[in-house]
Length: 248
Image 1 (spheres, helix red, strand yellow):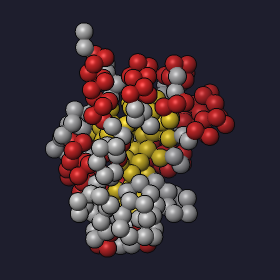
Image 2 (cartoon, one colour):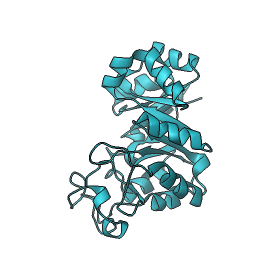
Image 3 (cartoon, helix red, strand yellow):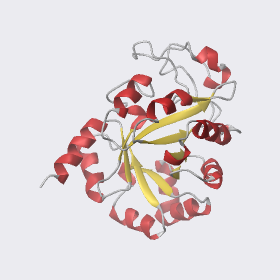
């Protein structure tokens, strides 16, 4: 089976990240999944944006959580032709008619703390759109990933591990933490993934996903290894390379 490809933030090398423009373009590709990030507004609504603050990607400043959803609807994304910060509900409505799955990363707030109600608020949106069964919920915060795993009904749950965490825990330790938290998948930086790590995760009953496979060499390496899913900022290149490798 070919390695499934997920468009990271909609395809951040190609279109403004986490924008409706990016998601529309990603939804038209043959990639199997679309990845996005979620913070909560002051109203507790899931908003699709990577950073806990508006400063880097929008024309506004300050924490996402300090503004109500209606105010965020007027905050424009930089270089996105008038797109504003999307709600998760808007992205779900876009993706629902396609055959693609979603990878939703639950982020921490501007203080680095998990949002107390982010799991139930995101699941409520998924249920309203009939998308829970087509969504993989992910988090770097292992207890948050575990809370999602306990809720059940999703296509999967993943614990994302920073590179320093991988160095500290090692493959055996990382697998043990993932299993203890009840998640189905461990997500790693592509540079930390090799054949022994993939074999160990599979032996532990875990799927192994990667991110940051964004250029020719790293994409080819992940495809050759046969990881369980590859999240990339350049899904067009990844699809092209996957097609070339599959050609007789």
